[in-house]
Image (cartoon, rainbow, N blue to C red):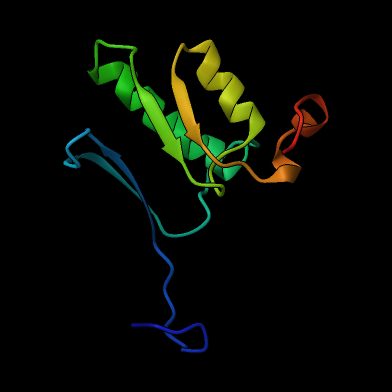
Length: 106
């Protein structure tokens, strides 16, 4: 186990595309800055790559994506909505593009 004060600290992020039974179909390993990355945020880029893989290999559009608050943002939800895909998850207040002003917070 590595701590943040260790000299050999390595951070690896995994993006998993899993079925409803938990079996992973595709694994995306991220270890650092990509050389040819576009200007879109990291979370949108990772999710877009997964959506592209789904569209190439799956014939259904009845899919639901589950996000934690790190990967979720308003623009990503709009993109998935345009593709007729559902998304469930929490969103950080500063990533909501003013949706809190429209919706009543309880």
